[in-house]
Length: 110
Length: 243
Image (tube, rainbow over all chains, first blue to last red; front, side):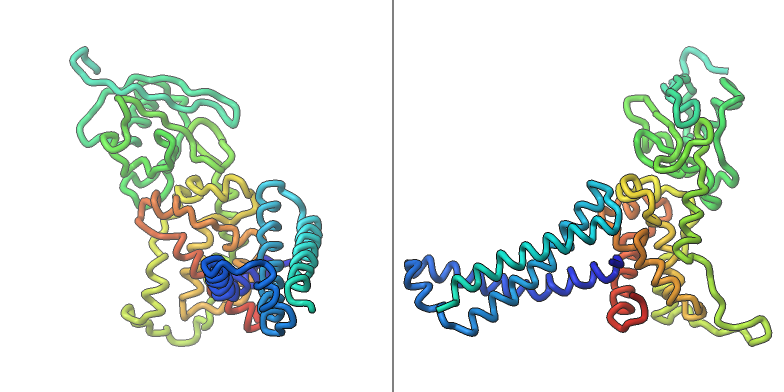
């Protein structure tokens, strides 16, 4: 995959994640300060389409961003060829996506 | 001739090719002495077989760059007083390039990469058309001028960490040249040039360590040029002009 395509997708997903991370951190601080229990948090997230969409978007962006990053690290440190690097990127990205979406389902599914 | 009262510099000079060793010389210290003066003194007075490269001696030609106490420098404009450490100088060939002999590095890979980066002007008019009038004050010309004073000395290339670990990377000088041409309104080769900048050896390798900017003897900032190329290639990719 071309360097400019990887660069563009990694930067765009980074831009997308900036507000997502900010909201994510604010929610964590809010939930812990208010002393919400796991059951109370799940009570608010289960069945919520908004939280489902929010965290699904987050997971997709993080999977793309992280997979491209790992590809870059492997390229510089391991010196792999392009096809091997692309394979690593796709496998890592899909694993992140599956793990992330499973977590989203656990939080929002009724 | 040196006298006992003279202050001497302990100079270690690389001898040999890729394999070799440093050889010590004692060189008399002079006022306003440059590192090139030191190397020339050794060749004329101590060992005429010493190989090194220079031409203009006044910071124009970019021929005399060497590694001085661990850093790449243009030796003709580097005063000994600026770089000497405890009365010692260690002078070697430029890093990140094959060594021909002693202090002469093989610049071929450096210039080959200028070609790969499409660092050649592509005219948009023929000789039969009138000359295009370019205002020196125009924003485009000023952007092109910011990167144009490069003398091809190879200091940035030798200073670059990314060049050291990635042999296919074009390096700061070639991409700086590319950026100058990208901003040149008379040039017609930008699509091919941006495609080269976006290729595997191109601008996206740069980690912005800025050693090139720190050590460029002409005070240029190739890191900024490379950042410009990253922006322009991304715009071209989003527009579908390159893939």
